[in-house]
Length: 491
Image (tube, rainbow, N blue to C red; front, side, top):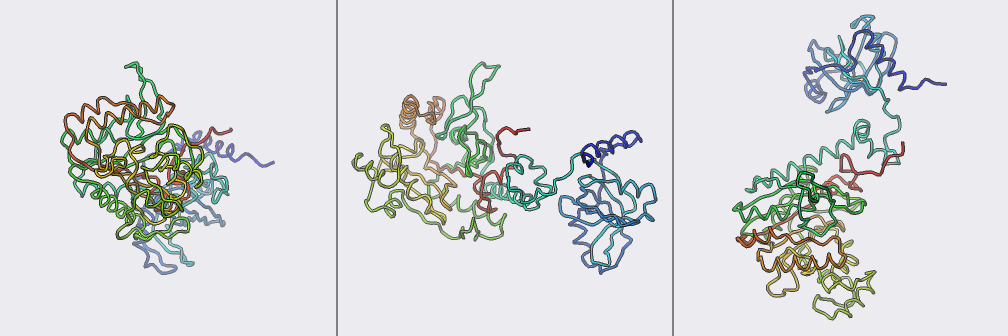
């Protein structure tokens, strides 16, 4: 029976401590990353050596012992390099300690740069230090593991052994940085608003609840940043944005996670057209930062993020897909018949024409919108925070951006009439009383803020996680979240 590898490593740890050595090291002053050495010594020919002293640090990913020579592969944050270790250079005692290192151990090494006869850039090690002992062995078959839940749960291992996963998250960081830089370059201030809300608002969603002991009252994790950001417009800020976490106590699927990241932005004195320009701008900036091009591939579909994007009304798009034309003002019974004939399932008695139009759009149009499309003129019933269209008050000045059959951004000509807003909040309260647990509450303080006057404004929110999925060709939102929510682990 083979020894338990964890117990073997624990025994090595104990032996080091007994010998007066610290198996968990100290600060290590490395001189170079692997990528730096590759760039600086790419010219070395096979068999060439230098007297250039360097210090590198990283994790041991491979070990090959050949008598008096041992080859280690050291991985740092930029790549892998070979450590060429000889007993003649290290001495008998240190060489024996080096051979006793395990895969996964962290170490620092001092030596000179060389290239082996086989063409491998290496550091000829003169001395080394153990920086952290790995007790649990890295899995041999973690790469391509069919049970992705194990990889999501143990993301720390996933990042070590699957370089492409690290690349996905490096792109995520670049995308967020590019959006932030674009917004700041266009005169927006980045602000921070509360995560704990007394009244859930800014979206239709089921919130998480928590109890504030000091105030002895219930609070909700925010479902959107909208209402606080628009309060800042009232206060005189002209352009504000926030990149932050939202929380919705709802289901999980490849495009939804209870905790997710958005960017919301609000700009005074502009309108929906201004939000379309802004949205194209930061999406294109993100694409260039992550991919270097505006033509990207997502799950086998080629997407062109360049140029102008299509702009169409919700009913226009529906009528392109069904035989009988619909509009929000038609007879409800006739609209119900058409909706049921075109795949809309259960239709609630409380639904008006606007809600039915929204469900019909979801059933027959969404999946067909592959190239970037601004879907406009949403019904008032499903847009409680958007301004009404002046020529058709049953519709609103709103767009949603769809790509590859999914919504990526949502924008309004922001409602700044406090009387109109109060009426819509009351309608939301009535819907909640009828059992709609995703309806918003009545936010009296927000109404008071609007009563002081909010300038005409446009606003937009975009799901950062979905955008990262698009720009990294990831099929699930959990592929782009470092630590996605999981069911309890069976230990």
